[in-house]
Image (cartoon, rainbow, N blue to C red; front, top):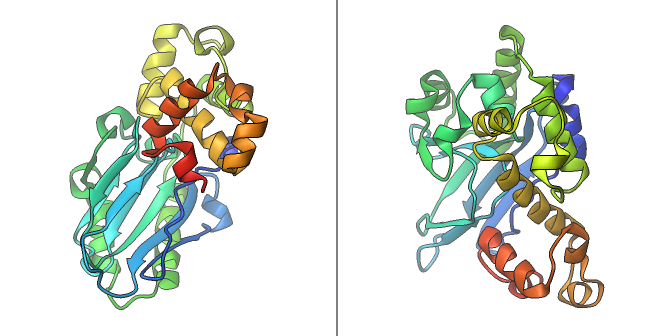
Length: 268
């Protein structure tokens, strides 16, 4: 899986920080044997019941996630690439645990067409019944997050050892170019890796779940998040010019599509 090392080296998908003492969010790094396919394991949980339903916002990050209810592991799901932010109520009390796969890793590992998962969450049992049954049978409500991540690490490591993963290096080269340019490139002219425009569309839809252009826009958005700008630095340095935005209005509209709020609200 060393072929995927450059993805982790160049891409750090960020989700918004959950604020407040009533809700906690944590990430755990995978074992080194699978760090080139799994970005992190994560847990989102309430410390005590809330007064009203919590609306959880997921921003566009180009990844595919498997997640499940810690208290009822039979409720397990997969969420594909999202071309815009997603927000949904998850109740007054919850404890969700997930696996965030780096872009292209999920289809490479499991042979699932990422396009069939895009812009939605589905029951994992319909996509990977064996993995769904594994979660339901091996994860216990009393298990700690550390115990669960150890179990999931071992499961995914075992899968990679038992199965041969086939890579299309033309696709990986195109992916690396997008990361190196922080998503700021002309995908029709700059991704000259031996793939025709038709092949490029087909292969990105399969491994990412969208077109190269749409994915590049998400990479560009995530680059802004990784810079960790403040309201003041955005106003003074205008870093959005560096990744191809022509004016502030265009940047704000684009950012809100992927994040759900304006940059001023996100970077208070």
